[in-house]
Length: 190
Image (cartoon, rainbow, N blue to C red; front, side, top):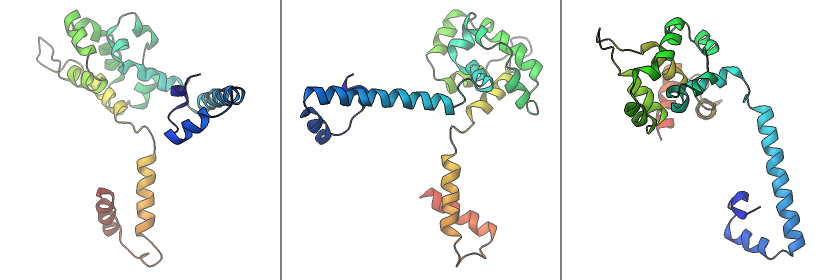
């Protein structure tokens, strides 16, 4: 196990660890490795890695989106289209999802694969139908924008609650919603 795997612990700590006898150093490294293995196991237990809903997010990945063989990993987008069916036509999403790799030529696909995922979907959203001059993939791009806009954590919401608790104290318990909102916006801007 190398020190890079353990992460940077600081120069002073690294110098101290290097002064350990070889037996203690080996034991220390083994203990750290066991910790990382246990941490990885606990993360996989707690995170919804195997959740099919989140697995369907793979459709956003350029390797899945444009590779006709990789697309089999995400077949029908059933769970996410049902979740967002108020905003999209789920039947059109599936149809257009199947058309994407055939709409672009190999050079275009190579260029698109060089972009980030949001940039790719921005480019796909501007593609137009040759006949009607309408946007070619509006439903699937709307779905992609919904998925890309989902928060990755609730930390920002927790920060707002913390700011609100700082503002609305016992002395300020009569503060109105409009004033509270304005002060919260100002505080969060700083």
